[in-house]
Image 1: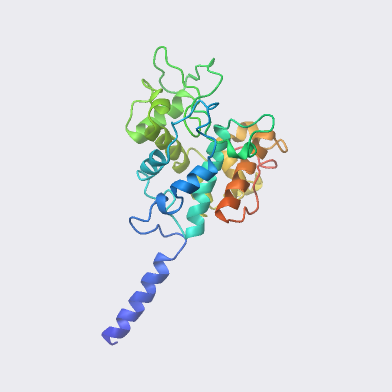
Image 2: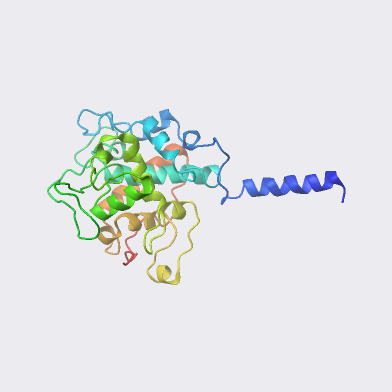
Length: 272
């Protein structure tokens, strides 16, 4: 076979490989190329409102900096898949930190994500006997995905090489760490749960147990991963509907169809 023919075949193979949905984007093609600073502002337009505890905390630069520590986040698959992952992450975390749930807020409730950094009810310590707790420390929700429970702080701390058991407040004090903790949870499978990342980038295949529990690929199973024990399997809930509302708005802004299987109302929660 002639060299130019070999070269042509090799070039075609490489092009097919790098355009595959399973192939991460090229180096330098990071989250910043998926969502610009102006888009970030449009999606989270009231996060710096005077009414928000998180005023000035959740910055675009902190988000992009944190995301760069996770090579596959927002860089896996074709461009629409990459956009969908960022949209899904921001939608789920917007629900967790929303400040627009009541009344008739300006621009509607789905423009008020990232209003809070910490859980409003701080009365619980969330030291559950699984893993260590530090004296006088509480493990209530902090950050974009409201990291909660001592064992999650321990796992996230190990993953990020930070002592979050003795210093859980770091997740609410350092915006880069705060985003890193949330993205770590997003990227990491736990027990029989897939990672949110694998679900939204079409890298998860449901097991027979998943199929029997109606856990099928889609945004709804991500809600199941995050808070299935509370929100899934009992018909529509206001919380699940709120997550979907953020997702649909963000999809519209980025020109994405929202797709199917958005809720988890008929899914059984993931078991232990």
